[in-house]
Each structure stands twice: as C-alpha cells, then as structure tokens.
Amino acid sequence: MSIASATRPKTSSPSKPVILLVDDEENILHALRRSLNRMEVQVITASSGSDALYILENTEVDLMISDMRMPEMDGAELLSIVAQQSPHTVRFLLTGYSDMESTARAINDGKIHQYLTKPWDDKHLRGLIEESLHTRLLEVRNERLKTELAERNRQLQTLNHSLEEKVKSRTHEVELQARVIEHAFNDLQKSYSHVIKLASSLAGLRDPGAAAASSLRGKLATAIAMALDLSARDVRDIRDAALLADVGQISLSDELLSKPLAQYTGQDMEHYARLPEVAEAALMGIPGMALAARLVRSQFERFDGTGYPDHLAGENIPAGARIVAIVRDYCDLMRGRVTGEPLSAEQASSEILNRAASHYDPELVAIFQKVSGEYADDIAQAQADVTSVNALKPGMVLTQDLYSERGMILLTAGNELTSEFIAKLKTMEAWAAAPFRLHVTESITADDVSGDET
Image 1: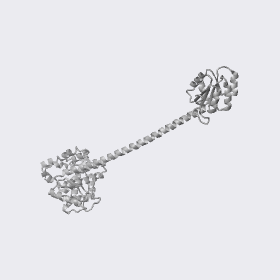
Image 2: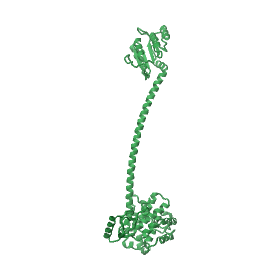
Image 3: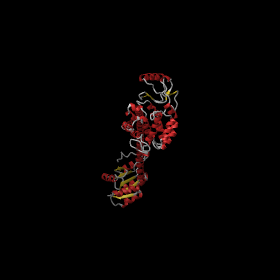
Image 4: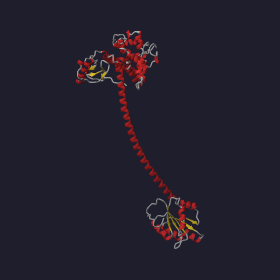
C-alpha cells in the first residue's frame, strides 16, 4: 500500500493488524510483501523514513519493519522517533551487514523488539510477527469468526423462515387435500348407502313386506354385532348382509315367492337352497361388499352343521352369518313367510329360542333376546296396520322408508310430509292401483328416524 492509500485514521479500529514496511529498495519491499501474503495482516510500504513518519501520523501501525541503511534517515534514527511518537508500535530492524554499533544504537534508542539480517527466512519472519502480534491476530481471527457466525446465523434464520413458510404452505396443502378426501369419502359413503338401499329394494320388488323386514333386520343385526364389541367395519358389513339377506329371492318365481316355506316341495327347496349362491354372485362384484357377500352366502348354515350350501357348523360359520340367520328367521316368522301364519314378536322370539343349538348359536340367541326388547317400537311398526294416503296430514313424519307396491323406494324415513307431498302420493298411488304402506308419526322425535348405526 502506498502513502496515498494509507488513509485509515488513528481513531479507527483496523480489521487486520497493520504492518509498515520501510526500505529504499523496491525489490526488498516486494519480497517482504510476498513473505507476508499468507498472513491476516494489512501491509503498507514506504520508501523513506520521512514517508514512514507521515504514514504513522495518519494510520495506526501495529508493527514496523525498517531497513537499517537508508539515505537521509537510517533505520536506527527512524525507529527511535517511532519509539517516542508511537510506543505501542512493534519495531523490527532489518540490516544487511554486520554493524554492531548501528544495531546497538537501534536497540538502545529505537528500542527495537527484533532485528533480522538479510537475506531473511520467510518462515522465521512470520513466526516472529505471529509472536509479536499474537493478541491482535487473535482479535482479528475472533472478529472474522464472529462475522462468519453472524452471517451463518442470518442464513440460518432466513432458512428457518423459508422452512416455516414451506411448512405452512405444505400444511395448508395437506389440509386442503384432507378436506377433498373427506368430501370424497362422504360422497362415497352416501353412494355406498344408496347402493345398499337400492339392492335391498330390488330384493323386495315382488314382495312389498320385504322392505320393512329388511329395515328391521338391519337394526337388529347391528345391535347384536355392537353388543359383541366388534369393529365398526365388521358391524357395517353385518348390517349390510342383514339388509341384503333377501337379494337372492330375485331368482324365485312369483309362485314360490307367494308360498310359505312350509308348503315348499322337495323340488321347490332345491331351488330355494340355491338362493345363497345367487345372492353372493349378485353382490361380490360390488366394491367393498366382498365380506357382506360371504355372509349372505353363509346365512342358511345351521349351528349343528345341517345347513347349506357349505354344511358349516359351529364357529366355522362366520359370526356375521350366524347373526343374519337369527334376525332373518325372526322377521320371516312375524311375516308368515315360514308357516303361512304371521306370528307375534313374542311367538317369533320363542321359536328362535327353541331352535338354539340346532339352527342358531346359543350365545347369539341370548344376546338377541336382550337387544330385541330395545326395538319394540320398530317391531310394532313393522307389524302395525299401514296408514292410508287419505289419512295423512301435513306435518306428519315418515318413520320408515316408503316403497311402491313393486318395492322401489319413494321416500326415506324422516321426511316431513307437506300438502304438496301428500298430493303427489295420492296421484302416484292412483297410478299404481295399489295402496302404499305408510308408517308415520304425528311429529318427529329422536327415536322416530334411525340412520346408519355405524
């Protein structure tokens, strides 16, 4: 650095230690500068003593290396002045000949810290400077590390902020995706429930009483399954199997469908025995209904092994199929599908109990006996006389799904009847030329409408 570039005032704190090189030979200054290139120092050069003193007046110099032999002012004189004007400056003398008198004068008057002879050893020179400026170099290195640390912290804060923004953005995306999935799942559940109701209504196209029986089977099967503390998925599959227990009857002729089971001939029973396989074939292709289809197939197995189609016995019969068998026969007994004579709820329950251990699982029968009492109102409604369309009043609420005489669902339970609804029902009934089976209540209550239990 030339004199002109040495502009740092004394009041400033140098970022690096300042070393002033003084020699009237340019090649010596270049050589010294090269020696110090590897060090964390700021190098200033001067070609005379007067130039060096000018620099010293304007710049804080930590260490000075001065040649001994220079015109106008030799090194000893210069270092003596520096010792007075800037005593904190470390002073090195560089001499190229053995002049003990000059060296002694520099030591005494200039109070030099070190003296070196030409040619010097670069490594030795750097070692002496390191020792002399140890504290200042540590300060510089510490300052550099602090600066680097501050920059790293700034980068880390920027990165953390960026990560926080990314996490917020990603969390928002996940929440949106979760909502989309939730809506899609709800839509799927609604579609699935509609498929179940549609399939159930198809089973009763030629048997109007089948709709109410299907609904009661579903409720009773669900109650038994929940009493067994089964998983929600298992409860749902058992409920669906109970709702669809009659789906195989689509293959029965009108003649067989109109006769009670007690009047079936041997050939009729052979045809009836194929219903489980027909039902399974109809259901197994529907996504999510594989287990329900298996339960429908096994619903005619008997606990003692005399059932069909696979002659399973005891616990080899799926638990869901054992439940469906109980609630199916219970409803069929009350409808008169078994003997031709409808039984009361108590009579039907007694028949189920009498067949425990032969037809049904005794433990499940015991649970059925307990839970069936909780559905007395539903059982009574299933057996009660239907309300005619002409007796309907605005404000009444359907307590059971309404089906046409062909078994197609028209209105779901829970719908409040309006004058417009009633007028439409009268028109539809006139077209159908058959009375509708209506179960209503004067006002809606929590127990009047039952949704999916699971």
